[in-house]
Length: 280
Image (cartoon, rainbow, N blue to C red; front, side, top):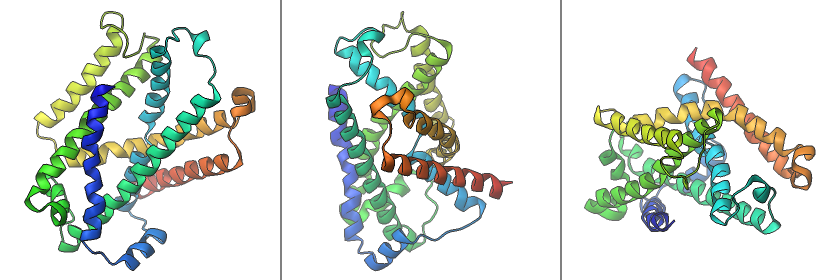
């Protein structure tokens, strides 16, 4: 927990993109129009990009991580058995709702300004293919000048060190649940042997891809595509369970949450169908 709290200060560097977007002085009227009325396309590259963006916004691995972390938090409070962890208080649900809502708000606002700042600096100068982290850092030059690389590196380190445990941990939790293994970051390596082997394997696989010279920027993009394709069926299952009052009782989705949830599911389904249609 202490480790994560320190890393959060490094991720605050990402707000530099907000300042950069204003310093780049884009045509704000054009920005507003393009945001509200986006340009639609029907080709393989366009649909692949849409699926990748949606895959980074609603990522399937987060379903496993979020649920597993709730269990981990209960264990840390002394609720060691299933009976003790059954149900949730109104206060716990309110905290979870606030956590998710603020996380969604900040992540989407930050994504918007990263796209805007990059478009207003790199794209307008004709640089549309970003192959390295050094090239990506150039978007921060209007704010930091030659220090753009240091600023970008700090943000990359902070987000990377936060993301690695989440990505590897979500894979470990998911596979452990499939095979019925013990899972949890509170386990000793001996008691959670399978869980930690998957965790270590995921980290080593990521390091291996980097060592063999794989383009990290391209890998980030390509890895988001399967996320965008796997999310629709999982979202549909989440909505079916969330709307089922037999399962959820008084905590079932309300009208607007149901509408927005099915709308998001529908959009991701259309994007997935478009991806396969244009690719084939």
